[in-house]
Amino acid sequence: MSVALITGITGQDGSYLAELLLKKNYKVVGMVRRSSTVTFERIADIQDDIIIEQGDLHDQSSLVDLLERYEPTEVYNLAAQSFVPTSWNQPVLTGEVTALGVTRLLEAIRQVVPRARFYQASSSEMFGKVLEVPQKEETPFYPRSPYGVAKAYGHFITVNYRESHDMFAVSGILFNHESPRRGLEFVTRKVSHNVARIKHGLQKTLPMGNLDAQRDWGFAGDYVEAMWMMLQREQPDDFVIGTGVTQSVRRLCELAFGRVGLDYKDFVTSDESLFRPAEVDLLIADPTKAKTTLGWEPKVDFESLVNMMVDADMERMAAKLKQ
Ligand code: NAP
Ligand code: G4F
Image (cartoon, rainbow, N blue to C red):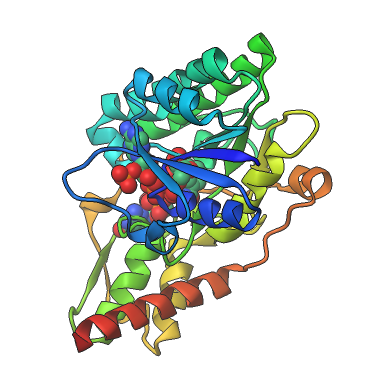
């Protein structure tokens, strides 16, 4: 039986990946960090089908212990301090978890299960102030936030362990991917959640940052399939995963408010504090290699994604108000 260890299983991607691997009959071990209240909302439906173990990317011995006990055949490193604005307020913590955490895990794998296949959650934030449009595997990095810098470290240490120790270690350079399970602080979910609040009369305005930023947004459920596909190949390699289409935050607002019959211009206000010290203005993927080599293609387009998220938040809000 294939055994997968997922760090970050309580996050958006971790929950979708765990569901995918269960369908493929994997034994799924999810690493969770200790907290005073549990954060299992996204994995509530599969909690009885997976093994949940405590561990933390800060703590090397917790990683070694998990690898020794479960001897995973595949390790997916999805855990990170993943919110870009927080990385300016907590740059050292972001570096500890999102950068050095990768080395801790790779080193533990090298010592305990060197034949295990390793997936690193790299990010299009590494392209930052983009040096090429669209961005592909060979595009040089120019990160614009402590988060982007930390991810660039995680990316290169993964490549380095592959080349130095002959490990099956790969990096997926994923562009923004969203879902109804997205954290409330990220822009798509912030908008869909607040559209539902406004439609239900719970608030009147929505303060936003840079509406002109452009992102290549896809559906998280599609993107976890690409993660799995990368670990099934004969040779380890890195891939850009995205849709190849870019949209502005303004267009996101237009579509999300439009879904419930409202005009975003009547509600969205500008809040200077939500603008970033250094912005990533434009991200757009060139996913040709993923399409031709992996056979991966996204199934959900941007408008369907926005509709899915707004509809889910409208349902949640209606259910909450009934209670
Ligand atoms: P997410 O929802 O923010 O989940 C992050 C996960 O990391 C959570 O399970 C969190 O646990 C865990 N975590 C944080 N610090 C930890 C630590 N010290 N030790 C162990 N676990 C820790 O992120 P996501 O959207 O699912 O993204 C998954 C990964 O892909 C992240 O590495 C992210 O940076 C990367 N990525 C995401 C995107 C995207 O658009 N979503 C694009 C490119 C790359 P708690 O539940 O306890 O907080
Ligand atoms: O949704 P965001 O916070 O995502 P961001 O910064 O692109 O990062 C996400 O995608 C990365 C992949 O490229 C991941 F690696 C990372 O972990 C995370 O998942 O912001 C998207 C854009 C930015 O340009 C931001 O300035 O939306 C703009 N924006 C405008 N107003 C806002 C807001 N972002 C947020 N969070 N909140 C706003 O009010």
